[in-house]
Length: 335
Image (cartoon, rainbow, N blue to C red; front, top):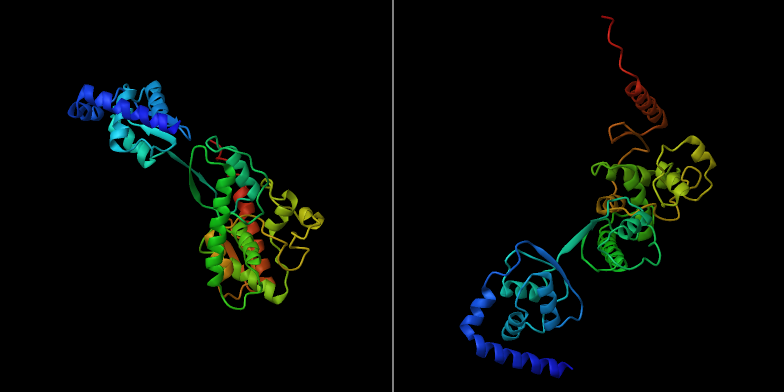
Protein backbone atom coordinates (compact mmCIF):
# COMPACT_ATOMS: atom_id res chain seq x y z
CA UNK A 1 0.00 0.00 0.00
CA UNK A 2 2.77 2.43 0.93
CA UNK A 3 4.64 1.62 -2.31
CA UNK A 4 1.46 2.14 -4.35
CA UNK A 5 0.89 5.56 -2.74
CA UNK A 6 4.50 6.51 -3.47
CA UNK A 7 4.16 5.50 -7.11
CA UNK A 8 0.91 7.47 -7.37
CA UNK A 9 2.51 10.58 -5.89
CA UNK A 10 5.48 10.29 -8.23
CA UNK A 11 3.30 9.85 -11.32
CA UNK A 12 1.05 12.68 -10.23
CA UNK A 13 4.07 14.90 -9.72
CA UNK A 14 5.46 14.13 -13.14
CA UNK A 15 2.08 14.67 -14.80
CA UNK A 16 1.30 17.98 -13.13
CA UNK A 17 4.80 19.38 -13.46
CA UNK A 18 4.84 18.46 -17.13
CA UNK A 19 1.48 20.12 -17.62
CA UNK A 20 2.09 23.29 -15.66
CA UNK A 21 5.80 23.80 -15.84
CA UNK A 22 8.02 24.34 -12.82
CA UNK A 23 7.74 28.13 -12.76
CA UNK A 24 3.98 28.04 -13.10
CA UNK A 25 3.82 25.46 -10.32
CA UNK A 26 5.89 27.66 -8.02
CA UNK A 27 3.72 30.68 -8.75
CA UNK A 28 0.54 28.69 -8.16
CA UNK A 29 1.76 27.27 -4.85
CA UNK A 30 2.70 30.76 -3.62
CA UNK A 31 -0.52 32.45 -4.76
CA UNK A 32 -3.08 33.53 -2.13
CA UNK A 33 -5.55 30.82 -1.21
CA UNK A 34 -9.36 30.96 -1.42
CA UNK A 35 -10.18 31.52 2.26
CA UNK A 36 -11.53 34.95 3.17
CA UNK A 37 -11.34 34.27 6.92
CA UNK A 38 -9.31 32.27 9.41
CA UNK A 39 -10.21 28.58 9.22
CA UNK A 40 -9.54 26.03 11.93
CA UNK A 41 -8.94 22.44 10.83
CA UNK A 42 -8.16 19.31 12.81
CA UNK A 43 -5.76 17.02 10.94
CA UNK A 44 -6.22 13.49 12.30
CA UNK A 45 -3.36 11.23 13.30
CA UNK A 46 -2.12 9.00 10.53
CA UNK A 47 -3.55 11.11 7.70
CA UNK A 48 -1.50 10.97 4.50
CA UNK A 49 -0.79 13.86 2.14
CA UNK A 50 -3.70 13.00 -0.20
CA UNK A 51 -6.26 12.79 2.61
CA UNK A 52 -4.93 16.03 4.13
CA UNK A 53 -5.30 17.71 0.73
CA UNK A 54 -8.90 16.50 0.49
CA UNK A 55 -9.66 17.72 4.01
CA UNK A 56 -8.16 21.17 3.41
CA UNK A 57 -10.11 21.48 0.16
CA UNK A 58 -13.38 20.52 1.84
CA UNK A 59 -12.77 23.09 4.59
CA UNK A 60 -12.00 25.84 2.07
CA UNK A 61 -8.36 26.36 2.97
CA UNK A 62 -7.10 25.40 -0.50
CA UNK A 63 -8.87 24.88 -3.80
CA UNK A 64 -6.39 22.70 -5.72
CA UNK A 65 -5.70 19.42 -3.89
CA UNK A 66 -3.44 18.13 -6.68
CA UNK A 67 -1.31 21.27 -6.46
CA UNK A 68 -1.02 20.72 -2.68
CA UNK A 69 0.11 17.10 -3.11
CA UNK A 70 2.62 17.89 -5.86
CA UNK A 71 4.08 20.83 -3.94
CA UNK A 72 4.40 18.71 -0.81
CA UNK A 73 6.21 15.98 -2.75
CA UNK A 74 8.58 18.41 -4.47
CA UNK A 75 9.39 20.16 -1.18
CA UNK A 76 9.98 16.83 0.57
CA UNK A 77 7.15 17.57 3.03
CA UNK A 78 4.75 14.78 2.11
CA UNK A 79 5.96 12.47 4.88
CA UNK A 80 6.43 15.06 7.63
CA UNK A 81 3.03 16.75 7.87
CA UNK A 82 1.92 16.65 11.49
CA UNK A 83 -1.48 15.97 13.00
CA UNK A 84 -3.23 18.46 15.23
CA UNK A 85 -5.50 21.48 15.26
CA UNK A 86 -4.41 24.35 13.00
CA UNK A 87 -5.66 27.89 12.43
CA UNK A 88 -4.95 28.90 8.84
CA UNK A 89 -5.06 32.66 8.16
CA UNK A 90 -7.10 34.19 5.33
CA UNK A 91 -5.60 33.79 1.86
CA UNK A 92 -2.97 31.32 3.07
CA UNK A 93 -1.06 29.93 0.10
CA UNK A 94 -0.28 26.26 -0.39
CA UNK A 95 3.30 26.97 0.67
CA UNK A 96 2.06 28.74 3.83
CA UNK A 97 -0.23 25.83 4.67
CA UNK A 98 2.51 23.27 4.13
CA UNK A 99 4.93 25.24 6.29
CA UNK A 100 2.48 25.22 9.20
CA UNK A 101 1.77 21.51 8.83
CA UNK A 102 5.45 20.67 8.52
CA UNK A 103 6.41 22.76 11.57
CA UNK A 104 3.56 21.37 13.67
CA UNK A 105 2.36 24.93 14.43
CA UNK A 106 -0.78 23.66 16.10
CA UNK A 107 -3.16 25.62 18.28
CA UNK A 108 -2.47 25.33 22.00
CA UNK A 109 -4.69 25.94 25.00
CA UNK A 110 -3.92 26.50 28.64
CA UNK A 111 -5.29 25.59 32.03
CA UNK A 112 -4.27 27.37 35.22
CA UNK A 113 -4.18 25.53 38.54
CA UNK A 114 -4.25 28.12 41.35
CA UNK A 115 -2.08 27.66 44.41
CA UNK A 116 -3.98 25.90 47.15
CA UNK A 117 -6.47 23.98 45.01
CA UNK A 118 -7.21 20.47 46.17
CA UNK A 119 -6.65 17.57 43.79
CA UNK A 120 -10.42 17.13 43.49
CA UNK A 121 -10.73 20.73 42.32
CA UNK A 122 -7.97 20.18 39.75
CA UNK A 123 -9.68 17.09 38.35
CA UNK A 124 -13.03 18.90 38.21
CA UNK A 125 -11.43 21.72 36.19
CA UNK A 126 -9.84 19.26 33.75
CA UNK A 127 -13.10 17.34 33.36
CA UNK A 128 -14.86 20.61 32.48
CA UNK A 129 -12.31 21.47 29.79
CA UNK A 130 -13.76 20.54 26.40
CA UNK A 131 -10.39 20.50 24.63
CA UNK A 132 -9.05 17.60 26.72
CA UNK A 133 -9.99 13.96 26.26
CA UNK A 134 -10.10 10.77 28.31
CA UNK A 135 -11.34 9.93 31.77
CA UNK A 136 -9.43 10.36 35.03
CA UNK A 137 -9.15 6.98 36.67
CA UNK A 138 -8.68 8.37 40.19
CA UNK A 139 -8.12 11.70 41.91
CA UNK A 140 -4.35 12.09 42.49
CA UNK A 141 -3.07 12.16 46.07
CA UNK A 142 -3.39 15.52 47.80
CA UNK A 143 -0.28 17.64 47.48
CA UNK A 144 1.13 15.70 44.52
CA UNK A 145 0.41 18.32 41.80
CA UNK A 146 2.20 21.60 41.14
CA UNK A 147 -0.04 24.66 40.74
CA UNK A 148 0.99 26.38 37.52
CA UNK A 149 -0.28 27.33 34.06
CA UNK A 150 -0.01 24.40 31.65
CA UNK A 151 -0.31 24.55 27.86
CA UNK A 152 -1.70 21.64 25.90
CA UNK A 153 -3.07 20.67 22.48
CA UNK A 154 -6.60 19.69 21.59
CA UNK A 155 -6.95 15.96 22.06
CA UNK A 156 -4.33 15.67 24.82
CA UNK A 157 -5.64 13.50 27.62
CA UNK A 158 -6.47 14.58 31.14
CA UNK A 159 -4.31 11.77 32.46
CA UNK A 160 -1.31 13.10 30.49
CA UNK A 161 -1.80 16.59 31.90
CA UNK A 162 -2.11 15.30 35.46
CA UNK A 163 1.09 13.33 34.91
CA UNK A 164 2.85 16.53 33.80
CA UNK A 165 1.64 18.29 36.95
CA UNK A 166 2.90 15.44 39.12
CA UNK A 167 6.31 15.36 37.42
CA UNK A 168 6.64 19.13 37.78
CA UNK A 169 5.80 18.84 41.49
CA UNK A 170 8.33 16.04 42.04
CA UNK A 171 11.10 17.93 40.25
CA UNK A 172 10.50 21.16 42.19
CA UNK A 173 10.22 19.39 45.54
CA UNK A 174 13.49 17.51 44.93
CA UNK A 175 15.21 20.79 44.09
CA UNK A 176 13.87 22.65 47.13
CA UNK A 177 14.45 19.75 49.51
CA UNK A 178 18.18 19.83 48.74
CA UNK A 179 18.28 23.52 49.71
CA UNK A 180 16.24 23.19 52.92
CA UNK A 181 17.20 24.77 56.22
CA UNK A 182 18.94 22.68 58.84
CA UNK A 183 17.22 21.20 61.90
CA UNK A 184 13.64 21.37 60.66
CA UNK A 185 11.12 19.56 62.92
CA UNK A 186 10.16 17.07 60.19
CA UNK A 187 12.10 14.43 58.30
CA UNK A 188 10.56 13.82 54.90
CA UNK A 189 9.67 15.77 51.76
CA UNK A 190 6.05 14.67 52.18
CA UNK A 191 5.91 16.28 55.62
CA UNK A 192 7.31 19.46 54.07
CA UNK A 193 4.47 19.42 51.54
CA UNK A 194 1.98 18.95 54.36
CA UNK A 195 3.30 22.00 56.21
CA UNK A 196 3.44 24.00 52.98
CA UNK A 197 -0.20 23.18 52.26
CA UNK A 198 -1.21 24.59 55.65
CA UNK A 199 0.86 27.72 55.06
CA UNK A 200 -0.76 28.05 51.62
CA UNK A 201 -4.23 27.86 53.13
CA UNK A 202 -3.48 30.29 55.97
CA UNK A 203 -2.25 33.31 54.01
CA UNK A 204 -2.50 34.62 50.44
CA UNK A 205 0.40 37.03 50.99
CA UNK A 206 3.78 35.88 49.66
CA UNK A 207 5.69 38.02 52.15
CA UNK A 208 3.84 36.42 55.08
CA UNK A 209 4.38 32.80 54.14
CA UNK A 210 7.89 32.42 55.64
CA UNK A 211 6.66 34.03 58.89
CA UNK A 212 3.56 31.82 59.07
CA UNK A 213 5.78 28.81 58.39
CA UNK A 214 8.08 30.01 61.17
CA UNK A 215 5.16 30.14 63.60
CA UNK A 216 4.18 26.55 62.82
CA UNK A 217 7.80 25.38 63.04
CA UNK A 218 8.04 27.03 66.49
CA UNK A 219 4.86 25.25 67.55
CA UNK A 220 6.12 21.89 66.32
CA UNK A 221 9.42 22.38 68.13
CA UNK A 222 7.75 23.35 71.42
CA UNK A 223 5.09 20.62 71.27
CA UNK A 224 2.17 23.01 70.80
CA UNK A 225 -0.70 22.00 68.58
CA UNK A 226 -0.90 23.79 65.24
CA UNK A 227 -4.51 24.99 65.80
CA UNK A 228 -5.00 25.65 62.08
CA UNK A 229 -8.55 26.35 60.90
CA UNK A 230 -7.95 25.15 57.30
CA UNK A 231 -7.02 21.68 58.55
CA UNK A 232 -10.40 21.39 60.26
CA UNK A 233 -12.19 22.60 57.13
CA UNK A 234 -10.36 19.92 55.15
CA UNK A 235 -11.34 17.29 57.70
CA UNK A 236 -14.99 18.23 57.11
CA UNK A 237 -14.93 18.39 53.31
CA UNK A 238 -12.08 15.96 52.54
CA UNK A 239 -11.05 18.43 49.87
CA UNK A 240 -14.03 17.68 47.64
CA UNK A 241 -15.12 21.33 47.66
CA UNK A 242 -14.51 24.50 49.71
CA UNK A 243 -16.29 24.63 53.06
CA UNK A 244 -18.19 27.67 51.85
CA UNK A 245 -18.78 29.21 55.27
CA UNK A 246 -16.80 30.39 58.28
CA UNK A 247 -15.46 27.69 60.55
CA UNK A 248 -17.23 27.54 63.92
CA UNK A 249 -16.19 26.52 67.40
CA UNK A 250 -18.70 23.68 67.10
CA UNK A 251 -16.84 22.44 64.01
CA UNK A 252 -13.57 22.41 65.93
CA UNK A 253 -15.05 20.59 68.92
CA UNK A 254 -17.11 18.04 66.98
CA UNK A 255 -14.76 17.09 64.15
CA UNK A 256 -13.06 13.83 65.05
CA UNK A 257 -10.20 13.54 62.58
CA UNK A 258 -6.40 13.43 62.64
CA UNK A 259 -6.65 16.48 60.33
CA UNK A 260 -8.18 18.48 63.18
CA UNK A 261 -4.99 20.12 64.44
CA UNK A 262 -6.89 21.63 67.39
CA UNK A 263 -7.33 18.10 68.75
CA UNK A 264 -4.32 16.23 67.29
CA UNK A 265 -0.63 16.82 67.92
CA UNK A 266 1.91 17.51 65.20
CA UNK A 267 1.33 17.64 61.48
CA UNK A 268 -1.82 16.09 60.01
CA UNK A 269 -1.46 12.78 58.10
CA UNK A 270 -0.98 14.52 54.76
CA UNK A 271 -1.38 17.73 52.76
CA UNK A 272 -4.70 19.57 52.66
CA UNK A 273 -4.19 21.04 49.17
CA UNK A 274 -1.57 21.44 46.45
CA UNK A 275 0.83 24.18 47.58
CA UNK A 276 2.76 26.34 45.14
CA UNK A 277 6.45 27.12 44.95
CA UNK A 278 6.34 30.05 47.42
CA UNK A 279 4.63 28.00 50.12
CA UNK A 280 7.02 25.08 49.60
CA UNK A 281 10.00 27.43 49.85
CA UNK A 282 8.56 28.92 53.04
CA UNK A 283 8.04 25.51 54.64
CA UNK A 284 11.59 24.41 53.82
CA UNK A 285 13.20 27.74 54.73
CA UNK A 286 10.93 29.31 57.34
CA UNK A 287 11.65 32.69 58.86
CA UNK A 288 13.41 32.68 62.21
CA UNK A 289 10.79 34.38 64.31
CA UNK A 290 9.79 34.51 68.02
CA UNK A 291 6.09 34.34 67.17
CA UNK A 292 3.80 31.55 68.30
CA UNK A 293 0.42 33.07 67.39
CA UNK A 294 -1.27 35.01 64.59
CA UNK A 295 -4.76 36.27 63.81
CA UNK A 296 -6.27 37.69 60.63
CA UNK A 297 -6.20 41.50 60.59
CA UNK A 298 -9.23 41.85 58.33
CA UNK A 299 -7.32 43.13 55.31
CA UNK A 300 -5.86 39.86 54.04
CA UNK A 301 -2.84 39.83 56.34
CA UNK A 302 -2.19 38.80 59.93
CA UNK A 303 -1.08 40.22 63.25
CA UNK A 304 1.61 38.12 64.97
CA UNK A 305 2.29 37.69 68.68
CA UNK A 306 4.86 36.04 70.93
CA UNK A 307 2.64 35.43 73.96
CA UNK A 308 -0.92 34.24 74.49
CA UNK A 309 -1.81 37.45 76.35
CA UNK A 310 -0.63 39.55 73.40
CA UNK A 311 -2.45 37.27 71.01
CA UNK A 312 -5.70 37.58 72.95
CA UNK A 313 -5.46 41.37 72.76
CA UNK A 314 -4.93 41.10 69.01
CA UNK A 315 -7.96 38.82 68.71
CA UNK A 316 -10.16 41.28 70.63
CA UNK A 317 -8.92 44.18 68.50
CA UNK A 318 -9.58 42.25 65.29
CA UNK A 319 -13.07 41.33 66.46
CA UNK A 320 -13.82 44.93 67.42
CA UNK A 321 -12.71 46.09 63.99
CA UNK A 322 -14.96 43.50 62.30
CA UNK A 323 -17.91 44.51 64.49
CA UNK A 324 -17.38 48.18 63.64
CA UNK A 325 -17.21 47.41 59.93
CA UNK A 326 -20.53 45.55 60.15
CA UNK A 327 -22.39 48.43 61.85
CA UNK A 328 -24.87 50.19 59.53
CA UNK A 329 -24.09 53.76 58.56
CA UNK A 330 -25.71 56.51 60.65
CA UNK A 331 -29.03 57.64 59.19
CA UNK A 332 -29.09 61.09 57.64
CA UNK A 333 -30.33 63.91 59.90
CA UNK A 334 -33.95 64.98 59.66
CA UNK A 335 -34.57 67.59 56.96
